[in-house]
Length: 224
Image (tube, rainbow, N blue to C red):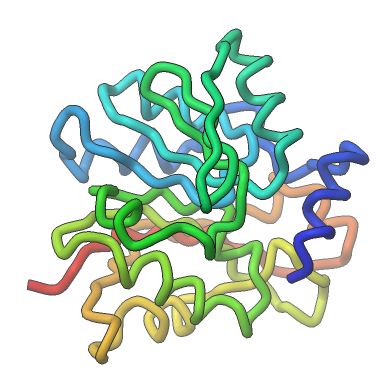
């Protein structure tokens, strides 16, 4: 997907995807991962998500990645944080306390950075990408995480022909193909831990005439 699509969304304030609360499945399922204090958590396509301060408040180091510098600046302003800023080949790094956000492309993250992440919280990234980009995304990001990484993945399942994405439909069959099938770069398990009809809570989908909408939550980990 053209990066300009997201940059324009933030410039024009068309950010219905931004949540003004903590993601409920995060609060419910994240504690089951039992990460060690100080573990680094990757939050791809993070926007200005309130989930990042929630993770940091639990003794974790957060690494967000976001295309829009405006979204990054809004995050720190709205949370009363003054970041230090530096530049690398991956983009502009904004850091305050245990939260670092790289204003750049997720595909520019290098192997060393990804190997330093013990976990990943993916609420907005996979569903934001069209089908042809999802495989390369999973291989680049998840394929370079450490062998013992853990993760929480949230996707949506709905009749794609009833509404244009993003967010796109990424059903269980596709999730298992991306994360769960053994292969040269995909020795992972995607465990579906939650499936709920959420259409009643999503007016955008209702207005578009979507007839079915389910939220799916997965725990991700490497195979033994």
